Structure formats: structure tokens, C-alpha cells
Length: 299
Image (cartoon, rainbow, N blue to C red):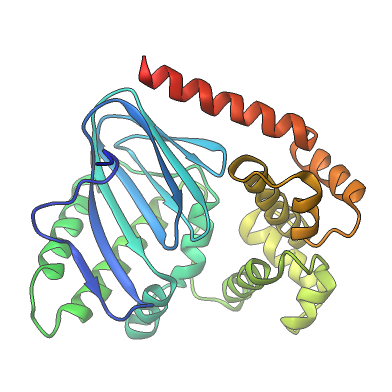
């Protein structure tokens, strides 16, 4: 049995529909180790309440501690490493569920918030807010395990309150995120990139789909994310290239064609500019690190 996720005796899960789900799981790592969590299909909020560890998210390491909540978005690959026992929570939220909360509660642009959260190194929590979040999780636990007809509405409210608290304490944001045309534009842009990054890398094309000018799209994305639209597109392509290098046996030419590069030499140059390494060395280095980590945990 994997030590990564241990569920409580009561299943903490509510399903609005197959596409619109919210669930809370108890995180329990009973012994030191490394667990590959694979690619996720939901937004995930991970909060370690006891112990410390590291979460590798798309080959980038983020520390897990009791004063930080880490957010992951659908499609990311995660791996947990810990040198001690660990306890906490994983809250899983589908895009459809978050969209339903936005509609029902008329809240902040929650999908955009989660996208921005996932691009940070975690949301710092003050000692004052940690008991508030614990109580919110406890309340959600009670809602998820009852059969009252109002539980969907209550759950929507609790999720909105939880994400509003996280928005307020988000270290990477100086001002609370509000529902504006700009946030909706960035959300739509990121969704389009996720759908088309393998075949379309032109800022002009994305801008035309969004009925804005390329300069306006660049200006808004730079303001809200810190990066230009072009950089976000290239970063998404580079991320997928790194995933294929580490998590598959595809050769460089196969990865190049998969990502829409007609010329493997062009892809090789792109990969070198994106990662600072050539494809073969990058794969070798990351595989070596992974094997070393496995051996260390077996000793």
C-alpha cells in the first residue's frame, strides 16, 4: 500500500457530477521515503500540519511545512519526499467544481487564483490563520460526510472562504485578486495555451482568439503573472518537453514532433535555451538524481 495517501475511516468525498468534484484526503506518510504521485487531474491544495518534506512539482522542488500551502494545477507531475513522518491534508478540486462555486457564490475568479497560486512556491500562512484553516477543513469534513440537501451550497461557501483567506495571505500577491476583465483574460489565455501549446506558439494568434491586441495581452499577463504571453507559451512547451525527457522513453526526435517542431534541430536549440542543457544530458542528469534518491531511501 502506498504510504502517500491514507484515508480516514470515513470517506471524505462529495461528487456533484463526474466532472465537478471536490474531496478532502488525509495525508499520512508513516515512514521516511519517496513516493511518486504521478500526473494529477485536479487542482490540489496540499497542507502539511505535522513534519516537513519536499514536493517535486514538474522537476522543481518546493518545501512542505506547516506554515505553507502548496497548490498544484491539473496536468502537473508531483513526487513527495520526506525524511520523517508527515501528516496533513490534500484538497482536490476539479475545474468544473471551481467554476460552479464561482457561479453559485459570485465569488473571486477562483480558477485564475488557483492558476496563479500554482505558479508560486506556496502560500505562506501566519500563526493566526492556521487555526482558521483547520476549522474550515473540519467544517468541510462535516459537510462532506452528511446527507443534508443543503450541503452543496455550504461546501461552495466554505471553499470560497478558504480560497479568499489564501488569496489574502498569498506571498506573491500585494493586492487581493478581484473579478476583473484582466483576470478573466489571463484565465482564458492560460486555458487556450493548455489546449493548443503543441500546435500554436504565436502570441498574435492567441490574441486574435481572445479579441485583443498582442500588446494588450502581453501587458495584462505581465501585470498579473510577472511574465509576457510569449514567455508563458514557451514555458509551457518547455515544461512538456522536460516531462517527456524524464518520464517517457521518447527520443528527442519523437518529442520534437509531438510538440509540433518539424525540425529536430530547431527543437534541440529551443530545449537548450529553455533548460540550459541539451536533451540527452538533461535526461541523464534527472534520471541519475532520481535513481540516487531511490537508493538513498532504500538504505
